[in-house]
Structure formats: structure tokens, C-alpha cells
Length: 358
Image (cartoon, rainbow, N blue to C red; front, side):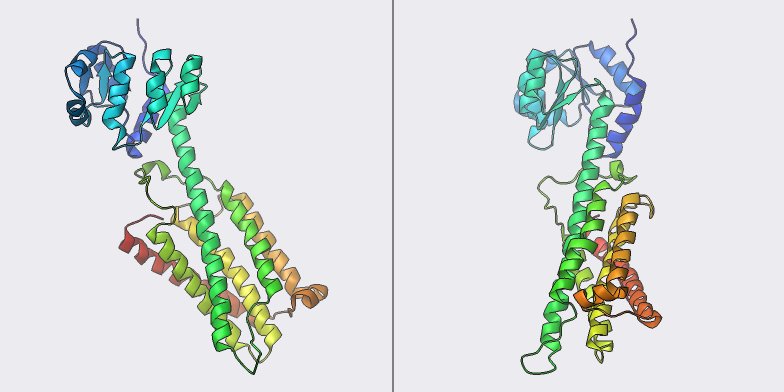
């Protein structure tokens, strides 16, 4: 006679509440039974029955639905009306398993059927829960948020790095004009290609397997109309690009008495700054420094490849580089420290100004 909620549902409901997701229980059970289960799950037991829904028009149902958590003694036809009450102001995921649930599953933003449900329900759904477990829906939300974070990290890293490279070349062409028809640029075409294909590409790909942030289910849902490049990200890309250009051009100008050395320093500085940049982005998401093995492998491999380009004689001829001494590396690391400190400081103020997380 007892059919209690599964143990894992309690944690799932708590996660939903922290994530700004409202959980609504729709059942054919008696009102008192539904309220008792709701209280066990930690849901408010504000309840309305199917009989009471029949007495309301759509506007009245929409008005009171904001304070309702439990719908009892309802039939599948009521599900569509309940869905309509929330549809325009929320992203609605609706669960169901029967033939009569198909209209509601089809209309919901995300129709969710369970593995033991009918084929009609599965066909009308966007998502099928094979283990019949509510917790799987919550895990899917968490995974989806993690994937979206990874996409944003990838875009932020590549755009900020490439914007910095564009600024370096553009500003250099304006100010470094030693003679007629001759422009000294900090980076050659081959060096730029190397940066974009190797030292940019490997860490960017490794961001795709970053672990999910521990606080990801404590954020409110994002606005579905929000652009993937938010104001905060845009300002951050611009600031980091400008900082990168400032650092590289400063080091380049300090060594112009030897053009090849100046270009090698600029080339290596860009690579090292981008290794710093990828960790700066991850720090915004409160990720632990060593939580992504593949990213560190990509960073180490990128640095080793850069050292080969700088110190192997045959590569010197191809990439127009020269070996660097300890003093040169000191300047490069000082530039990295400058970007790490000032980049994070400026980003802090940007986040305060825009009131956006990423």
C-alpha cells in the first residue's frame, strides 16, 4: 500500500531549487495523497484538483499557477491546459508516458517520456529517460549547462587571443616604419599560422573536456534570448586583446636593435600569454587549477613545441627565430605576470559593472 518517492529524488529536487528550476507534480492521485508526497519531497503543497481546473478559464488558471506546485486528480487533457499556463513565461519540460500525454509532450519546449512509456509518447518527446528516473532529467540539465560553459570558454579564449594578434600586427604596421616601403612586424605570417594551428588549437580543444563547475547548479537559468557573447565576455575580450598587444609590442620595441630576436621574443610572448589566458578563463568558472589533465597536457605540449621552434637550428631557419637567453625569458614571464594580475583585476570590475557571470 506504500509507494514512496525514490531516495535520489530528494537530492534532485534540492538541486532544482538551487538552480532556479520550479518542479511541479502532476498526478492522478487523490489530493491528500499528492500533498503528502509533496511535503516528503520538500515541495510546497499548494494544490489544485482537475475538478477545480475545469471551473477556471485559461486566464484564471494562468494567474493562480504561479503559486501552485501540485496538480491532483488530473487527466491527460488537463496537462495541456497546465502547460499553456506556464508556456509563454517559462521554458517548460513536461513528462509523460501514455498515449493521451502525447499532445502535451509535443507542445512542451522539452517533452520527456520514460523508457517504459508507450511508443506514441516516445515519438512525441524530445527526450526519453531510459531508467525511468527523475534524477536523470536533472543530470541532463547539469550536463547541458556544462557543455554551454565549455562553448563559451572556447569562444572567449579564441576570440580574445585572435583579437590580440590582430591588434599586434595592426598597431605595429602603424608605428614601426624604419624606412621607405619597409615595415617591421612583430610576427611573420608563418609564426601567426603556427600560433593559430598549434598553440591556440590544442588548449582550445582541451577546453571541451573541462569538468563541470561545482556551482553550476546553483546559478539561475540564463535568459534564452541572451547572446552567447555577453557584454561581460565582449569587454573581457577587448581588454585582454589590448593588454596582450601592449605587452608584446613593448617587449618587441625594447629589442629592436636585433630584429630577429625582437620577433622571436614577440612570437614566444604571444604563445606564453595564451597559455596564461586559458587558465584565466577557467578561473572565472571556479575550476580547480589541475582539474583538467588534457588541458595541462595541451599546454605542456604547446610550450615544448615552441621551445623546439626557438632552440632547434633547423627550425630557426624555417620560422626566422633565434635562441633566447634567461634575461629574455625573464621579460616574457614578467609580461605574463602583468597580464595575469591586471587582466583579472580589470575583469573583476567588468563583472561588477555588467553584473554578469561570464
